[in-house]
Image (cartoon, each protein chain N blue to C red):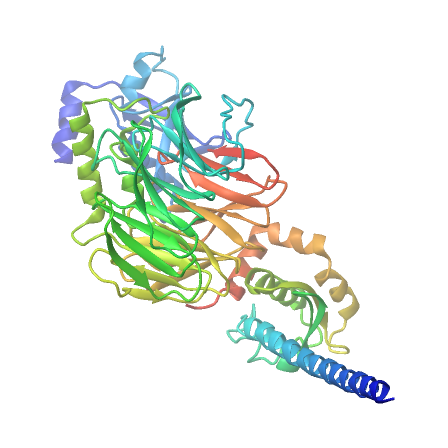
Length: 443
Length: 160
């Protein structure tokens, strides 16, 4: 098959060019060799990886005169005048090595809350931003204009701890958002009408974490050591998951990444993703197919982390008994996250370590050590290969999950790093902390 | 008179009770330190020697008694480790010191200040090595060297 393709290329008399691979620093890789002008980035990647003699083939991006080679070398050169006699330099860039870009401008400041802003959540289409605050209200914003949308959603009696939008595949209009509060209740709000649709009471202490699942169930974790499973459309309590010995701080669903990204497919997107195109029905179907792909055949899995130093893996739609109890941490667990492909669970703890667990069985995989103080938050890259962590020791660290070791150290913050997130398209990492500075990191 | 004697006996019983309390408190402190020392020892005994395939415990480089923990503040402890290199001219003594420091820095859950010394009389250049192991700057510089870091990670990583 390769022979016939080569024959065809020869018979078609495709123009051939001499290329030389160069890394970003200008160092040459190998010697010049000739390639047909219609060579694709995949083939270039094969050749480059062979020259680099990498154990694990690195995904690479290729640039000619600062233009990225997307479809084929020929296309990229069409817009540029190329001399076929000279050797063409192709610069290869290994993906996912981070450098700080100086953040020079603040595009908008959204003022409106009268107390600290505790949680924020984009709607699944990205059209709205909801923010929950210490002043017990939720405000909705339009991210592109920076203006408030609708009225403030008031009703809780204490501060808002978490927000969760209804998944796109359940309702492509993205109308409902759920909020949890220190007052122990969960409220479901209708954002178009601007009122509270339903109040879910049952927890006896502060609700710390909230997740709107993809199967029509709402999960709430509380300081009363339980996790309650509610039916989203009528607010009926389905199940109470008990087992933790202390406050439940954090939860994650195996389908979290698919629910967060909805109909947006990062693999197909360019660096600046614009509005999603397509009718509501198309978006709904796309989101549903992406959701079903990650979900697999079984129901959604839920993992919860607590102050009792353990994690529990649950199948909340089926059973009120946990699938697995994951022990090993020596201090409280601040955050748990499923990898986007739902194969690995990562847990960040105050014992300075991050532990990796199997996403299906909860079996312990490895510990990532390197931080010298409590690890506050972690975030996965879109391809589930890298993990970024922010810690009390003021550094961020990027970990290679396959090799189970540190990939890059990112010092720079002047004080503790409280929050980190990796953008779903994998392009940027944002971090913020005690030094009142928000930093954006990229390649 | 009765009232005074009553007051006196009350004061006396109070005094006896308080002294009993402080005794109990004093008795409690050494136990906490022992537990912490055992915690520290548990972590360092599994560190592998850079040259030989055995652990530091197996080569008797560290022992339970060589770890001392003192309380500085509430929840802040001073940990002192005295290790014995296998031979008096061991060239990897600094590397072992580095491994000890890194392991505890990464794995010990409570807040601590660490001092590492070579047991007296067991090494030819012990004063120099002591100075080097306890110098924060030199430790940080050493960990920035990728080769050294690799070796330390190898020694410190627990087999899962």
